[in-house]
Length: 54
Image (cartoon, rainbow, N blue to C red; front, side):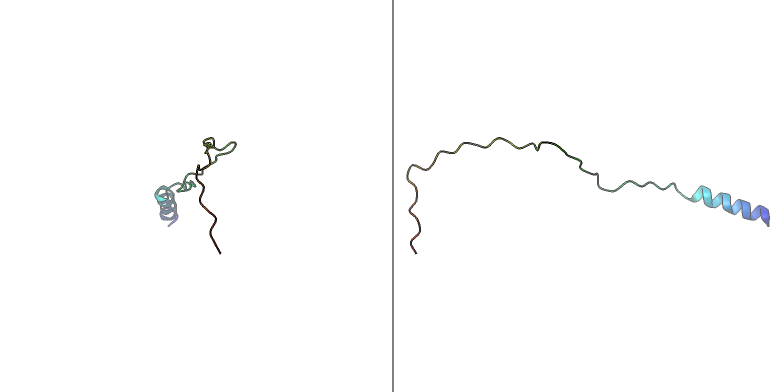
């Protein structure tokens, strides 16, 4: 009976896969300056639209 219990314990240990605690989604760790393009200079319209009448 003791041999069967030992064998059962060994079988359970061999059948149990190792636990891997890695998230399914990678963690995005961006720090520091953001990669944004510089602002584009815009010249004002040569014929601006009239203000709406109320």
